[in-house]
Length: 179
Image (cartoon, rainbow, N blue to C red; front, top):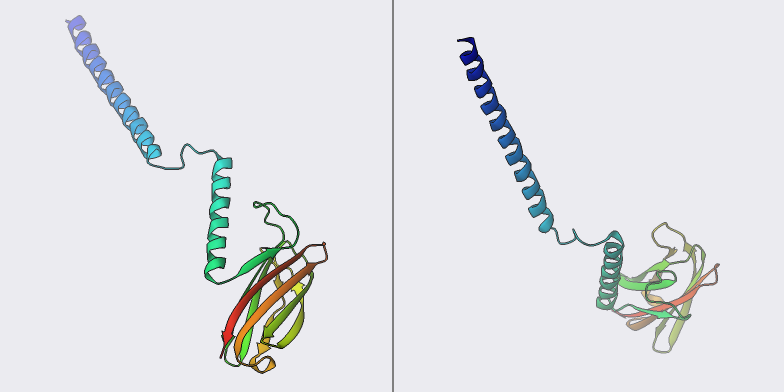
């Protein structure tokens, strides 16, 4: 009789172990299948880090160009420069605020130096100097707030020349209708 009891227990234990193993294999399969299907849904899962950085850089450049074009900004480069070279760019925007025209600048690659803004309205022409103020992301000219009375109402042409102490020189221009 003792032999039969042991065989019942050992058969039952074997069945329990087999069920546990089947559950573990099933859980492992479900986990792997779930992980594989979620990585297939990610569009960047098969792209290397270098390709991601390059694509992100190109996207950023395209966005920047679109914004500058939509705001009427132009960037004129005086020295040869490769497209991917972010050093040495200048941009300019202007807005009339009451009786003044406020001009803001964005300079990349200029740790310090000087800016000269030349404003023209018909035959009236005036120049405004300013220092370059370094900031970690980009530098700026210390600011231009031009009284409307300096040139009068009309279509103002604004030309910026930035000269860095590191030898870089860039220009940017825009125009604004002043009322």
